[in-house]
Image (cartoon, rainbow, N blue to C red):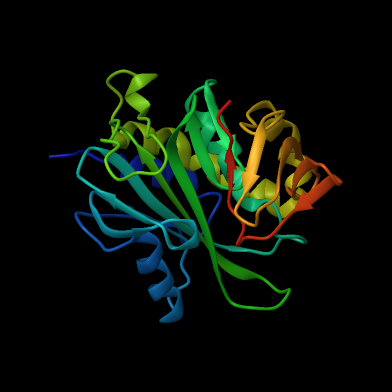
Length: 252
């Protein structure tokens, strides 16, 4: 039976988020979907929801993420947030998670965590509410603990045990949650500019040939102060912000 550090996480985070709760479910379709359902039902309490197994996990642009017990860590965090500018939140989250885990991890704009040339995890940001006032944000994170089989995956996968031998999902959760809450609150106060240098240190695409799903090709030139991807193309420096555009490194 997996022993989750729910009490230790609650003790660390509750002073930062009044009303904070921690919940671990043996199985759910998606932790982010469940928290969004709760928000729509009028349950706005800040919540960390962990699933030992997800049956219909969701990634960016509708991609699936199915998790098995022990093989990965899947969790979502909901909390109220009112930043001046929401741009770059997924990048700030990535910086926090990578900094909490290992110096070898890299970040691929806008929401992936990589180890070398392989994907280790992903981030999904969703919000409930509208307008410029405070909204509820749901931050979903999935991290491979064990390296999955590559069958059917467009990107080769990686697992945390390759660089943190023996680590398990509860240990990873304990390492990342409190720093993540503090990072999100810092983002609310200061925006992405606070995290720009940290992202640059881990930027997988910096200086690399890239291809975008809209047909654009060029060389990665980092991200600007609001987290937009900069690509040097044949027509000059292009700034990419669309959430509907995906980008991938081009193999040499």
